[in-house]
Length: 117
Image 1 (tube, helix red, strand yellow):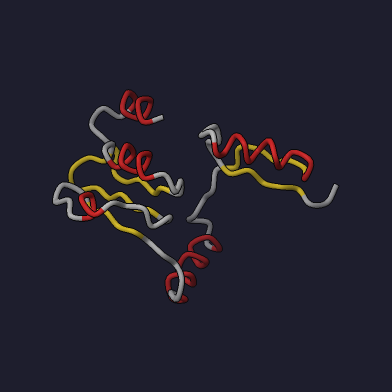
Image 2 (cartoon, helix red, strand yellow; image 1 turned 45 degrees about the horizontal axis):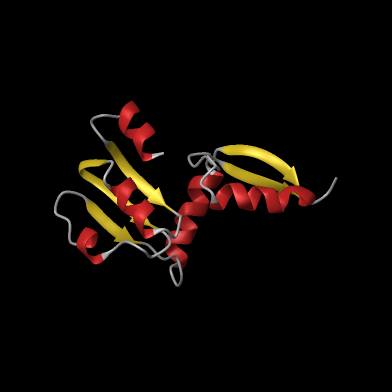
């Protein structure tokens, strides 16, 4: 994945929001960010050497106990300024396969699980 991003954006990307819980993958993605950009781990796995980077802003982000931030994110979503790429919609019987794709790095957008037929 990092190689494809680097090939399509040789000058680097502005930011990365990583949800993977994989420190090596986070490090690879942070390496794609151009100087002055930002790398954020929502899984709290940004390593200390990256947190000390002067080239890019690196942050471990945690939403707990931050109701004001949650309200802002909710407002952005309600106003239509926050979009989530939906890769596919599946039924409950397809969840095990979807989780396997996710852990193997094969998911590119969000998967919506349809609860009702």
